[in-house]
Length: 591
Image (cartoon, rainbow, N blue to C red; front, side):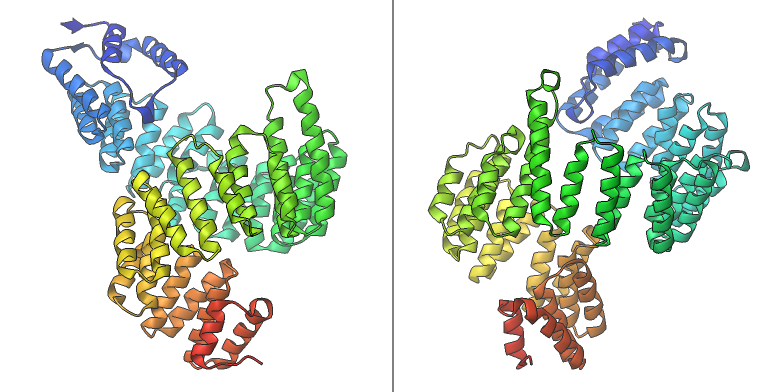
């Protein structure tokens, strides 16, 4: 049977295809697809729907429905080549992406672009995948051709920027973008914004700042340029970047995004007074912008101005309650916003060690999406107050809706018992939970760590290896097992492999950096150990890391430095077990 009418052919295909969950289109998407088929009917192939073709289409669909996206993708790619139908190539591309088979995805995207050269999605997908695979030959010219032919050149430049952003070599990506942006578009602010982002990704903050300033010269009112001048300038030239941002927000009082970013960066620099002055200016300029009450409260919390923060949050909650009573606002996010504010009040109460007030605020949270979280938190606070039985009853009263919430309850209860020194009871809780929810790597991980605390090293190793088997990308599992071997000064070759894998998965994790530093200490590479431990400490204020760093400095002969590190830590946490054990083992007495 031959279909010369492409629309009728498409209807037959739609009857065969049932999209997998990961790529299920909405009703609007389907209507748009049919409309596109109608509009481009003359461009689609005339295909004979033979029994063999129908069988292979059905086989591909069946494979996809069973999660065999590899087989489905290859079948559809073969069919796309045979029939010259771009829709089949697109489907092959989608299945390959779901399967994370980048090689096949690239082949399918190229076939899709070849069969539908006027389809911007097809061309962009092909270029992006080629870039992510490091295949850049001719990429700059291809990008320029798209920009040159585009009616909306700003959008074309943004797409080019997104495509080169997929390239693993960021310096090469910058070079490709430079070649793709011909002189005829360099008068557009968007071109310089794209170059600014590419330079930043290539670790060239000076160039990034330079390009952002060029964009602002072309468009003095550009908030996007102002944001980049602040962000990139804080690394290249902090004081000048702050000065330029002050001038911009003064002359552009409506630049809300820039002002909020400015406040955020001031808070990060602990320049709280200026941050609060900026929020005050914003509130004067926009008195009906009640979200600024929340912003000002957040800044006051960071500045430890708790009374003022509480006053602002109570005012903000009152506004949200008024919104909830408004007929016009029944479908608003007022309930959610009020609950978020109460979570900040909980945070304030905890910092002031007023746990009863924290619990009272948690009880007032009525947002259904936060209610479970709030009640779990309440149980944790009850346990911190010494009421373990009450905490257990609070958790028992909850009705978990799914496996995730069941896991959270078990992990929370185990954590409560662990913190109370009842490790055996915590183990019992998690052993029971592990039997009920055998696929939970979180439960297995925490149970393994409890085994390690009990000294059951064989059980710890077995369970942690099971976590890695179930979740090969679990950096914490590799780190925990690798650190344990390093700490016990055994299986150091395996510890190296485990920690390297952890570092590959999460290179900036301070806990992993600490473990790597401790591994280098065990292998006698003191300089490397000090480097990694200092990197860890720069991201995480941890007495344990301080204890490690001090020990490496002491053993390597830098004893004055070690004493300074330890003394500073002891001034705030003299009773820390790891610190005291380290000092005792090395026979060190702090002055």
